Image (cartoon, rainbow, N blue to C red; front, top):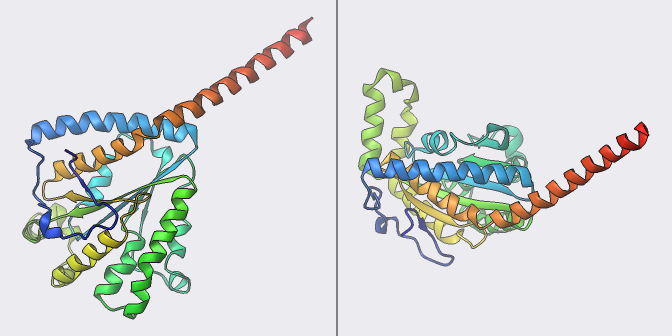
Length: 280
């Protein structure tokens, strides 16, 4: 059974039906061992993705504060070649960004062929925080679900493999992590009163996430709900879903690399023949 729950298109998501503390029947030691195995395979897959240059990958991470987006990036990506990885974070839009459509700032940093791209937060902020805080009228953010679906379909048609993860943390676990930051001097730099203010809107955010997951999980760009109360299991669930997805492209990448190898060998043979002719 997959560790992350893939949301089927047209499914109505109820987050209360997903246990944030799920462990997949594993203890931490077994989970970390399985993670290491899958992470090594992810490393090999990324190498082939990068070398073949026929596809790109876009991994989207969304979740409530303290759900572990940064931690997931550090853990899941730690074996990958940084030359082929691009991480983009989306903060409050700048004046220039606000002067354009909401997808403008996102589209210009989508990954090119051969690149493994990661969005730490994403275009979904415009149907999440924008909705919860009433930053635009409801008809505006309501229309954005379809804009997002069309945008992601275009990326997929252009060779981008899209995998989206919602890091599902419980309200209790979030409180514990926020208090932990207060109690540990080494983590105090992460503190923000805004995290506590946003927590007051927990139910509104849960509803907004449910709508985003329900309306924007497609065959080309699926959403996965990742139990995030256990950090080790969060990392395992994300890595497993990535590996399972990318395995389906391995034959294409190896065929492309075989063609590339043959072309390189032919080029080398022609060069050596030219040297021989010059030496005669």
